[in-house]
Length: 120
Image (tube, rainbow, N blue to C red):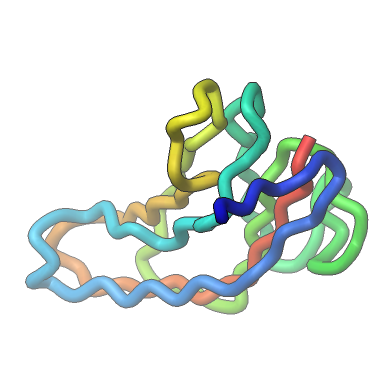
């Protein structure tokens, strides 16, 4: 039986990415949410904040629908996040994924964070 998230549901979790110099690149997969989003869900907006922001008040708090809020607990050489997985067809397996990018391929880096997402 497949599970599908419902509109208004808040999904949350943790991410811990450790990037070593032997990783073969500087983009590292951080999170994949294994529950499908409803068909037609747009690709979520991503916001990273060290503490909280107007759009991202905290894990367990109300977050704007369609936004993934990443609450950084700590990082080193962290440069950017990207993600996707809006469900445009019924065949998409994962709700969304997050990839972590570091400043360069030669530097070791890490990112520990909590995340929250409200299904639109």
